[in-house]
Length: 126
Image 1 (tube, rainbow, N blue to C red):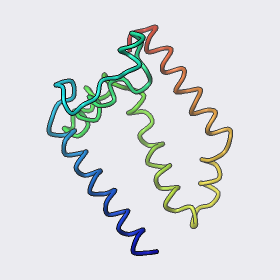
Image 2: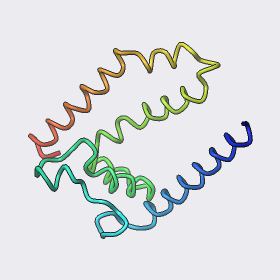
Image 3: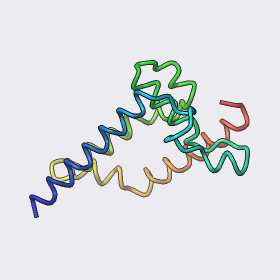
Image 4: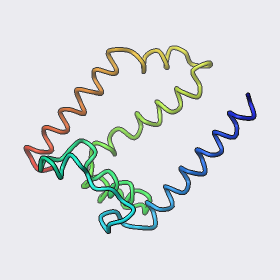
């Protein structure tokens, strides 16, 4: 069982590395292999993730100002993503942190903030 888990972790790491290479090397918006936002195409409104691919490309090329312009919410929540990842792998050592990040309050707050970001970015053109 440990062998399968280690193999899965290695596979995920290799896939993530390949994706990071592609996003760092090629500019999204140039077509294949970057998907377009279906929500934007259908409605004309930006979803909370619109600009995420371009922001990731900019961050991988150390252009954080452009990344912030493409999707400021992504830049703001990166520390939260890092904390969630840390919490997942260290839940045995820090159960209180894992419990707090899986709490109803945290999940509702994250959902409401994401919704507000979606609304305000469409009203103010962010």
